[in-house]
Amino acid sequence: MSFITAENLRFSYDDENRNVLDGVSLKVEKGEFVALLGHNGCGKSTVSKMLNAMLLPDEGVVMVDKMITSDEEMTFEIRRNVGLVLQNPDNQLVASVIEEDVAFGPENLGIEPSEIRKRVDDALRTVGMYEYRTHAPHKLSGGQKQRVAIAGILAMQPSCVVFDEPTAMLDPSGREEVMNTIAALKAKGITVVLITHYMNEAVQADRVIVMNSGRVLIEGKPDEVFSKVSLLKKHSLDVPQATELAYKLVGAGVHCDKMPLTTEECVGFLEEVLGK
Amino acid sequence: MIRDVTLGQFMPGKGVIHRMDPRVKIVLLIAFIVFIFCTFNFFALGVCTAAIITAIVLSDVPFKMYLKSLKVIIVIILITSLLNIFYGTGDPIFQLGFLKITLAGVYRAIFVSVRIVCLILISSCLTFTTSPTDLTDAIERLMKPLKVFHIKVHEIAMMMTIALRFVPTLLEETDKIMSAQKARGADMESGGMIKKIKAMTPVLIPLFVSAFRRAYELAVAMECRCYRGGDGRTRMKTLHMKPLDFGCVGFAAAVLAGIILCNIFLPAVI
Image 1 (cartoon, each protein chain N blue to C red):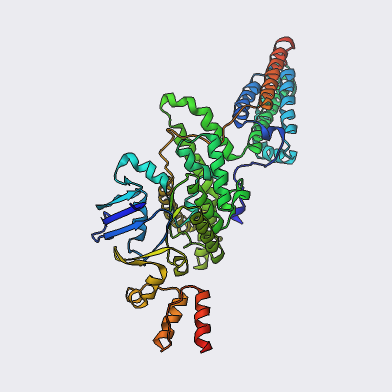
Image 2: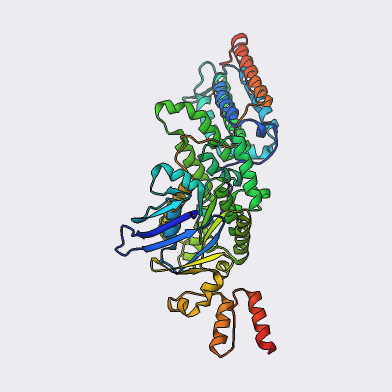
């Protein structure tokens, strides 16, 4: 059985008649890195909040590690297990000292002080912010703040972290810092669900799920999904720049066996084409 | 720049007072305030003042900072001492109409001034050497017994912590909004007081809207991190009384003994 299973989720916010989720089903395996794509208002963020019981579906079931999110007794266990990192790092930090902020989660769980200390240090080392542990959050850059927010989740020792557009408010270097941290989490065996607008981030995932108006449009390995350029374009979704270029070249009559996803692959593809 | 405002008066350092347990500091501050008002002659006041000066020297904060905090209340000191000068009884040393200055009045004026100065100095000593976070933390721990009266101690402390956390963030935001409104031609500098206050409306409204949005997001983030109020919560930092703290408590006890002895065995001046 998968680590996270969501079946046939339907949901609408009180003030809207429209169903934000209209029958979404998805599975996430343990240790997997899944990217969730889709344009604004397609329901990605709503799904992310359902994975850790912040929202409950009107219809359908979300199971996390054999726990049903609608079971109130399990709420805290689920939230400990599935951490959620939000978009704005400023609004996620609680304390005026980095290490105290990271300690907030484990403190809520009622863990022994010495164990909290250890977890905080470990989490800060994982995100590479250990040297900053006594600093104030407002003195850090956006990328650093977001890494502290990630450390705050890691200190609860979750088996899965859901990122809701963690790089949307960051500059390119901050984005890279966060993506490196995500890669480090994956290497540690933590399941990652990344919601993003940036296709070059989605390319790094094991699997990509594309949502459109409350439904799953396509899912599969990044190269499978992004090879369906015309389908994605039809729903006004982007593809990585490298794929876009190759797609246009193919349209102009250039032959291509495998759509490139990254800059490196694209360079290879162009060399091949120009070499002929 | 508005965002450079430092919150509170905390001066980072490694002096003796800095290293004290913040709880002990708060309790001793209250004790010293009581001591100051329990001095009934110059000798007792002298002991108390000497103790406070010792604390200031040990605090490792430039004396200039203390002078700065005294500057604020200089008017209050002047007014109270002026009033006291004329309220003395006994033989006048100077008389002008119904105004008369007596020796007792002069003594009383000096006495009151020294008391106020001592009060400010010792309070500043606490705020200079303790970070706002430590202060909130210590207040939470000291107020814990009040739970018996159903006072939500943890919640109050949490609110203080969050408020402290967001002061710099909101200052920065105010700065941005002001720049944005100025860029659209808002005039915030000219005109009188009333006009200036009115000109702040286009700054305050977006600031409030954004503060509420932040509050909502923060609540979501806190829930994601399993926050459920103070019950069953532990703390990473545990405060322990160190030998230094016991030493300071001992010092305070000695000061108290000194003050009592002076009060009893030496003549009262006023």
